[in-house]
Amino acid sequence: MLSQDQEADCSLNLRSENTAVIATPLPRMASALRLAVVQLGVTASKTQNLERAGSLIRKAVKDGANLVALPECFNSPYGTKFFGKYAEKIPGESTDFLSKIAVETKAFIIGGSIPEEDGGKIYNTSTVYDPEGNMIAKHRKLHLFDIDIPGKITFKESDVLTAGSSFTTFDTPFCKVGIGICYDMRFPEVALCYTKLGCKLIVYPGAFNMTTGAAHWEAIQRGRAIDNQLYVATVSPARIPGDDYVAWGHSMIISPWGEVIAEAQDKEEIVVADLDLGRVDEVREQVPVSRQKRTDMYQVDFRE
Image (cartoon, rainbow, N blue to C red; front, top):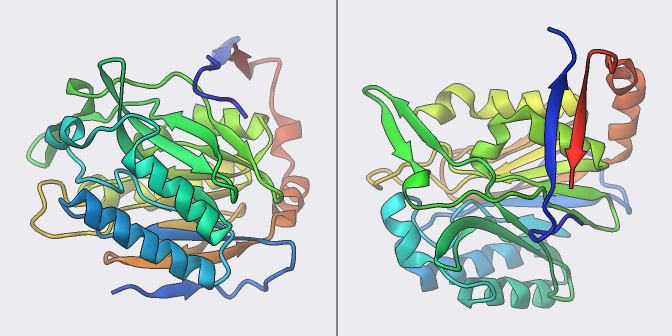
């Protein structure tokens, strides 16, 4: 695992130019990773958010999930005016909850993200827990969401948040998993780095909005899956009209072939899919782009 305190850098060098559980029709294998993404309806009450997340995690595990992922800012509303108000130390209330629910359900839990306070700075941070309740990964959002689309949306996370500086992976009995948060998904270099690290699944808790979600949400994640020939999962908060920031929803799981194999709509729900990890190797053998890269012209390098 690349932890938060292990500085890692990856650069591209150019040498010349109502809650439902929706399961996919994939056949289930005894050794398959059953992934559930929980599109949680987030409120202004942290207590209520934690209680609701716990209920939906239990429901997902009852349906057979052994890895469950929550959305970005699952314990708080998303917005610069909320980050400081809801920020916690790690460990803290929300991460203690995640550890306990992992033990209770005996599942791997990706805790979406929470606003984390550390050393006077605030980060957008995802933590991951194994079935024994151990925190096995912590990812701080690498790329801060600073955009200005005239007449549509202006948002600047960097007014409040500090960016992380490490890639984050963790191991399961099924495969190695990479973690990104929302805007990280727009940067293909991150996914390329995770592929080079041996990941077969990348999970992005994310809260795209009604402008960027409609335009880019599905296209970007399918692109990351196709480029890297692995599974990609995104986990959005549910869409709540009237909120200061309205999330797009449509949490998805994408196959290594770029197929949408599971998709939520806009309301709170759980989607579940069995990931046939042998499919990753199969696609990479059929279309062997990793062996066909022009490393005489470009390559992905790591710096630690």
